[in-house]
Image (cartoon, rainbow, N blue to C red):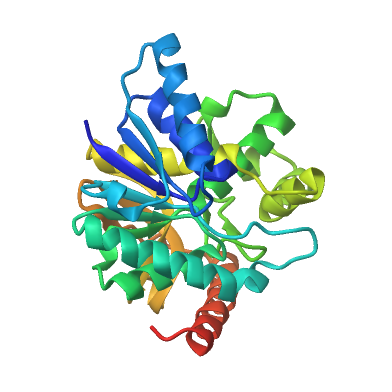
Length: 311
């Protein structure tokens, strides 16, 4: 069976382990700096496997050596956003955590593909790529799948239509300037703009942009973990099964959409090689303006990172 190592055994990391093991997608190593926590969580999950009849093996550890030979590394480690804290407030602390996670795991799994979840997402993916020296195909950020899923959920709540009939596409940075593409989103092929009144659609777009913050404010003591961890699982599934799945992810831009030397949320093809291709949409003027605004915001965080950390 394939091997996935998850760095960070908090709610997001352990829930990712849950989804992966439940699907018998891979054996899982759950690593954290806190002694006992990853061991306890993985033992608990291992004891659930006989009940659901799955043979995924789970190991909890504080030692990077146990991640040896991983096919996929998922980095969820870092501080969660607290109410009132911007994503960029997290920058320096999480840069140290993600930088160590990336370089330590690479020593033991030189052929792994990396999925980065830690916020600020686009910038942490950039950091992981620079610190490991890996090609861009092998370091991908999880953002757009989650943001698109949130939008799909909100459309389903508003319309009463099955989520299976709803396709939404959210690009851009993982933050308040993300770009929900209402023109490309649809319900059973009918454009959202034709299905919903403009004010309802605008409300859904705004709620999508603030989707993470809404949950942070409700929980008071943490951030979302069910949907983000499922998004990571879908990415790992597409990579390990070589699905050629087209989903929005944070990818390193090398001229696509006119962007360079930064990570940004765009549609990509996920397969055995990791991020195998970037798909380029044609934008109308409004979409292009939103896209450029989001890119400028993400670029600022990249520049802030460069001023704080040597890459």
